Image 1 (cartoon, helix red, strand yellow):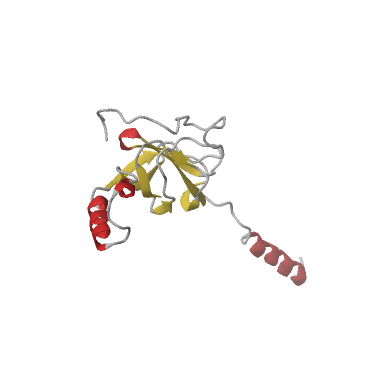
Image 2 (cartoon, one colour; image 1 turned 90 degrees about the vertical axis):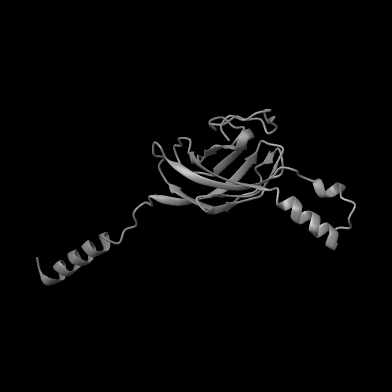
Length: 173
């Protein structure tokens, strides 16, 4: 092999080391579904924020992004944090003028009733990473899916109705 051929071979070998490897993790959009009568003021998945959710609603709004493995792994979990307003729409019935000092004082008391939660949640198995869907269920229970199928479509692991009743007593909240 002459000098030119060795240089070409060396160059090709060096370039082979530059080929892109497929990523082990990707950022996936976050979407929420609230199956309760409370408002979810904000939530996060592994520290990345999701949209706020009105009672008995969800979908239609995504935020970026939760970093998850491209391939699902058994026992895989995420940390979901959220703030809940148990008395949605209370301010509609207040006699104080909106944004007056008296209204602000009452709103401060209302906000003091918000509850904050955190749960380590197992992620449902997925074939390919897609949208991270977080389901807020009665009794502060959370379910998380991250595949390419959507709620209410075939293949999605969770088939909860949007309107779910809160039981009179919760066992594990």
